[in-house]
Length: 111
Image 1 (tube, rainbow, N blue to C red):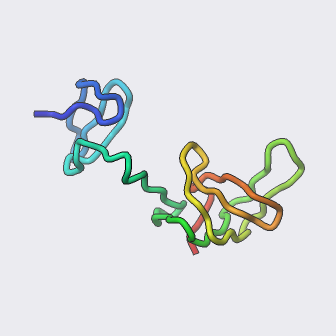
Image 2 (image 1 turned 90 degrees about the vertical axis):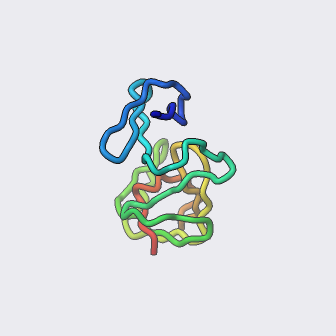
């Protein structure tokens, strides 16, 4: 029996290789993964190289980033120590030399 989608809970899912795919929302998950997602476990945040990030890690920027609404540019190689993981689109809360920022993990590399 094919399980319903853990994200949207609809039953329009199908197997694709070693994954299940939801035709309605496009969510993919491993066949070996549990169908019940535990909200207390949190989500896994990975950096640009695929390393798992956790609270307290040190990361560096892999790309220059322009800060919207200001003339500040965060330079490649800038180091952020003692990061905190959060929810939403910008997963990493960190402090750089020029201030506090919420950044996407895809622009960071774990040190």
